[in-house]
Image (cartoon, rainbow, N blue to C red; front, side, top):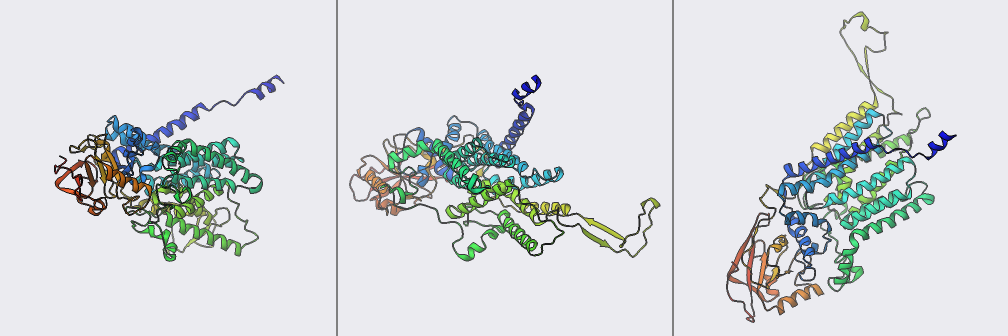
Length: 587
């Protein structure tokens, strides 16, 4: 009795060895992704970095919201939270290779949890096949165009992806064990909400996972309750990471998501429009029908700004059609002696709903391919699952290959066997056929990728090397076109004021408070006026709209180590003759 009493009170020991092994694996994955980022991809100089990732963090630290107006275009008003670590490393002048290494570390965490997800998904497969299929799915996922091309960049898709992958692993792991539990729901919801707050495009994954939780059986007894708890946790996570910035935007612009959803919030600072980028994706019925197959060839300006090729979506579509045809044939030609295939495990239902709902939201809201990073990582798992659905090994007899031999083969007596119907019979089991097919499909997915180039370069001595000509004190600087130029602004005198006069968000033709404020600042400013443009001489009509013009001989070049360089800096004069600036160059 005493032994039984004590054993009932003793808690299971913590698996210290297992925890250390898991930690070592994750650290190893982080080390690999950091090294690849630093020594293979080199220094990231992507368009968004030049436009807003560096500027936004600097502006946040120096409290320039409201002082500058849209110099980083629409993205001026994105939360700077994820940009602060990169900004800090640049400010303390870390070597660029070290910065690239650190920026690649989050991907290692995401890759580690991808592996854990795959082991949960293939847990019911025999050991040898489990490791084979998990390895194939893993390789397909980590070699996709998005995960590789965005490694170590400031595009900040990997950071949110890590949180989404951890949340998905929690839900899958507990689903495999039978019940989610409120702790799992709260943790997964918080993680998805935090990812959404760090970058709003990740909200589609929160909705996708919520749908997967909702559709767990029984839906009405468990699904609705669990989905409600998950959804509330998502909101809490969202407000943890985005709440302070939402309040800042609301106090400045009367819209907590400014300038998005301004058709709802009706801020006077911008047009009453939803502000979705509709440039990308199919627009006609024919384009929709061929949409997944366009990725079999190189594509640019269809779902992304740069040229790339990735067969994964097309292969998923083909295998899904094959699985549907196979299922239909089995339904029509059902035989009594062949047992029906078992229902898919709950974890596969969760993954499929999550993937499909998230993808559907992506097609509705974005159609920008680099936002698909979590789904790209999981594409290998779905491909393997669909291939296994086409050929279930439990219900398909082995194929027999008959080889007819015309000559007599002499072999030792101990090789002989009882006579058979054919001279040679070679039986090929479905698992081997399936494994071979899976390897072939994996090779097609992996070796046909044409990776997008988000702009990298060889390392410089400093991450940003910017040479700004002398600029007069208390200057107002107009950025007169939509080239990514805001990265040079932290190198200007801090008493300057920077205005986005014409870009992807604002131009002189608009009639809102933001444009009116820019016009007022230009009109009432008594100090020096400058323009920034790339290429040189761009958009003189924007300056004319503000009754300004470039002074002859008053231009100089801002030299940098970025792609957008050199940038033209010009002294401006008022073309109506009033308060004309003296004709002196800025350098």
